Length: 134
Figure 1 (cartoon, rainbow, N blue to C red):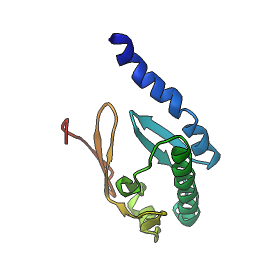
Figure 2 (figure 1 turned 60 degrees about the horizontal axis):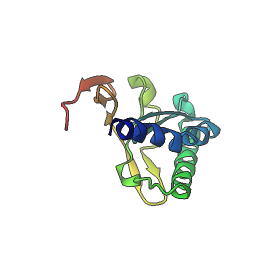
Figure 3 (figure 1 turned 90 degrees about the horizontal axis):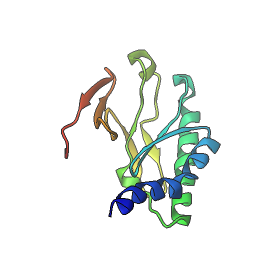
Figure 4 (figure 1 turned 120 degrees about the vertical axis):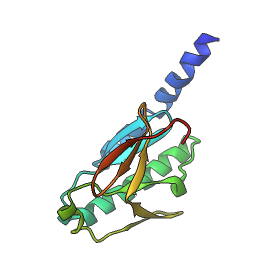
């Protein structure tokens, strides 16, 4: 019984390891916790349109990779947030990411799943520990 408990997460990691190659090929950085994957794009505020294009391409490639591996990206559960100083955030004009099956508005609050389960808010960039199960 213990073997199955340990092998399940390990096999999932091995199964999805290639996903991070897809993310890196898009010029993005990725992070995962369990089945939650986060993609990061670092860009100056003046180049935010380029960052949107890279992120859209990356999400499309992730969706295609997932489909070819019998997984499904839930585009409607996608959350996006701009992080930066108040002055930098005022330079950003794009407020929606257009995906194939969803229009994703940029949010001022997102959940960061992981060992601490954080609630991230901007523009003040505050972090709040979420209660388990919330």
